[in-house]
Image (cartoon, rainbow, N blue to C red; front, side, top):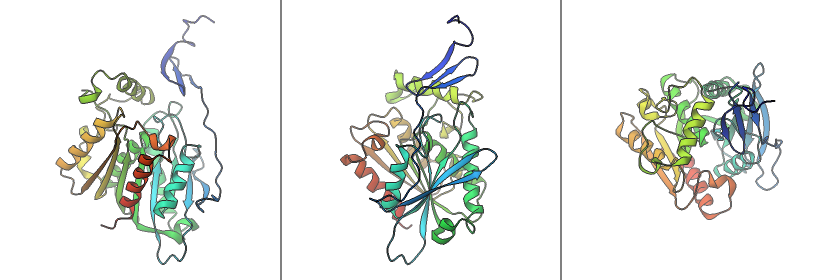
Length: 315
């Protein structure tokens, strides 16, 4: 076949994970391994998978910590994995161990959402899947045993990293605009959030990684209005100040291409009409989602302690 044919012409590459051709065909160069749910022998955390929407295959993984002499119900953590909206899953070797450890450390029940990925399911599908997952939690609060018997639905936290942090933010905004009866979101945890903007600033200027991230956004969301789309640039969202919680923790990494956007997010949130508290943490000398690849390093442990403290602080 002629390399210049429409079939072979490449529209976008996200190495080493994904190649999108101009005719719309997508090729995944690395498939994500599936890690089954289990009872972790080290942490004592139990996990199981649930189907949220049978007709679309939308699913999630539930986590239940091992807690001795528990006198009250536990907070609920709703987690959204990263991966540029197009790679990874809630069931991968990168995310299953991380959420398992977070559940053990924070003593929370968790649901890790396995939203459908682009480009097969272009954005805004991941946002719709995530919102459906939140509504499922509400609908199952008196049905699903792990939720009904163990969760305090007045203590709910949304969290995610990278693209997942972007999703978590957008879910918090949507919750602030469309109340989820029976679910009170106490806090939002954004780890190395994937945000952008048309006008580059600070370390973004001339940064090739930032350019790739911008091209990735357009590839996973073909109908986007661009890098000032409110989904990826919260500063352009008229509902930004309606964030549906009173506490936000933003964690950035010094060498991350999204570092300055995360800091900008904090500054804008503090200046907005939102009536809440913003907390901030920076990991010096580290890169994007370093804690997933090196979870035993000191700064990854510091990050874990910060997130756990945020969740366990009553305000």
